[in-house]
Length: 195
Image (cartoon, rainbow, N blue to C red; front, side, top):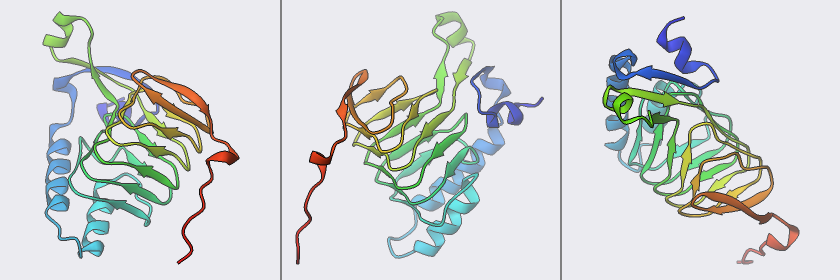
């Protein structure tokens, strides 16, 4: 098994920084830089760059610059995906984003971590675990989603939350560490203006 097999598997792992494919990271940095230089009216160019960068990129994937990721090939969008300004995805493991996902400004989705032991950390040993964002999820501004987390369908993550554990479907969760506050209910429905 080579490092790419390990990185693209849907399991956690531990590796040395010297094992990581730096050339693929350089490729992602270049594609992100190109994406971040596009004009607002260059939708087709943005879509082409995301198709080249991501492992799977649904045609309804929209990302506002500035956007950064580690590799890109480990990011998979499965339907309408709206990612607002200044998002970072550290995709050292697979990141699956379900349809109708809304990701607010400043969100960090981080599969990657470092060894807790100081000597191991100094030696460049890191960890990584996959992240799954279910369909119909809204992640609020400046939230951080940590490695190994699954967010269930239809849930809302409050702004500024640090999500370290799985969040079930159909709930509002917030805080640091993030915890379930209550279920999403019919009372949460809003009435739009009739213009």
